[in-house]
Image (cartoon, rainbow, N blue to C red; front, side):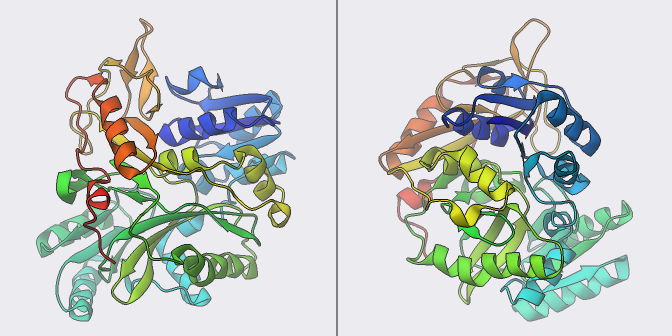
Length: 422
């Protein structure tokens, strides 16, 4: 099987690493890739936001399977273009990808499917924003406020705050730029990320993970695309995956098919384990980043066959998934100024060590690895348990050198210390 991975982040690096260990993969390419993926895959240039260019590359390279990593090409229709070219593609259609591209659309799907989620108020103008905040405040019995961009925002389009002025500022900023926002009911309890592979009918959940969305230790600082993650979750209730499959994942996939917009690919459910039960925070239409970096190292089932089965509608015939013992932790090393104004172009050393996945890197004119994004590396390790994996990950972080680099020092710490309660 010749497999083409679309994207350039640590998620795509993790996908490439997992695919190289699958004996069914005879050739692997990553487009456009980064300074790390070049060690495990051929590189091809492509504009990921151009579906025609993605399909042309897949055809010209002779791909048997295309795996689309980021949300932007999916919402733009890359999977549709690849399938129209007669090539199997792991990723939803542009219509189905609206479950991530439009939070209002996702809320409509969940309502029709009976999926438990936060109550939401769509906001189309400044006057509606004040009213929506008041209604959410009354429903929740007080702050914090939750204001979300309705469209794609690279994981950074939400403000959760007790400061009404900050909530208003975020909402007005999006509205002034021509966008729309949702005000949502605040959901208490720890959050869980659960991926599911689906062909539009059959749904196979993967291993639950938890990511750290805030930039600084103790969940302080601005929201980011994710500063680290770990799996499995020792504190998760028994039967959680089965419950979410029955109440969230399968009903959503069934509803999408009923609408004539079948969802095949990776359905990501962001969940809150609230005092009133499981609630959906958001859906994504692709592998999450940085959770992919800890889920895939624990997956023993060959990845290419699994993704191919989803892409070709044969997931019901796929064997049950098998998992390795132990745990995995990833720590994101971010550039100075992330997320507001990340500095790029700085040399990176120690980035070729074991478990170091490249997120925002490029090869400079002199052949050195340089930072090329806000999240630069995702340093990952596995261990016999979460404590061992965490220790190994931070030992690997210590070997990285990047001027002004920032990382959290508490990834998975609360879980190791048993401080998370459901």
